[in-house]
Amino acid sequence: VINEVEEVTKNNTRLQLIVAVGYSGKYDVVQACRGIAQRVKDGEIDFPYPDLLIRTSGELRVSNFLLWQLAYTLLCSRALA
Image (cartoon, rainbow, N blue to C red):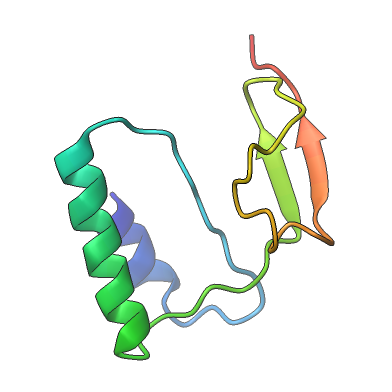
């Protein structure tokens, strides 16, 4: 699904959607991080600072998650039912 969405929206220039999810599968997380790090190193992608962070768990803290990048970000916390 992600590959398909990337392909369909690859020419979009006005908005960027960055999705961060919690996941505890160590191998998968390490592989994903290595792949992303390589793409950043190769200049294929960069990471702009987010304009909006939505915490769907209802948490009000960021726990050092993107702490520096969130300095001027609008934070929205709302538990989903």
